[in-house]
Image (tube, rainbow, N blue to C red):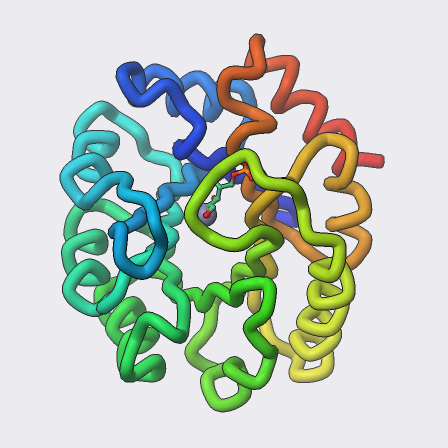
Length: 221
Ligand code: DX5
Ligand code: ZN
């Protein structure tokens, strides 16, 4: 497993130039494209559907695309995003009536499967699905918008999940999403995260070589 993955969230990209924006952050050294899907139902915001994912693939993006579903229900969109080129798909357990089945569906479609825990969602939702998970995404803000502040209580939650992953001897990635910046990424990594999703700290912040380089440098320390 590659030690640390940096995943810029396209929510903060210049959407009129999405293909270029994504290409530039990847060339600058980002690993994964984080793709926030919001339905104005599960969360009070509306973003992109599978056509945009397919458009990125058609544009020539070969890096993994991590589809974060903030939608309810989830199953139909799992199928559509897998067909549109997604590599990783995660959803919020509250948004699926049959969490086990939805996780299985993601793997059946050939993608890595993840569950997303909101800041107040307890870890017990993981209890009977550990063997169905390729990654866990901990929200460090309430889902729906970019540019929010990191909720400090997430650090203890990262530690608790990491501990469980290790105790169980599982090969599960631990991602953190929301308010990740150059000045808190080291703390987040120390708590046990190995995948970092950042939107507003990367897109629109000038030279991507410099910005992505700063994140990489922090992670190397
Ligand atoms: C929030 C999204 C995040 C968001 C992160 O609901 O899931 O991926 O883009 O944005 P920043 O990094 O600006 O907090
Ligand atoms: Zn996200």
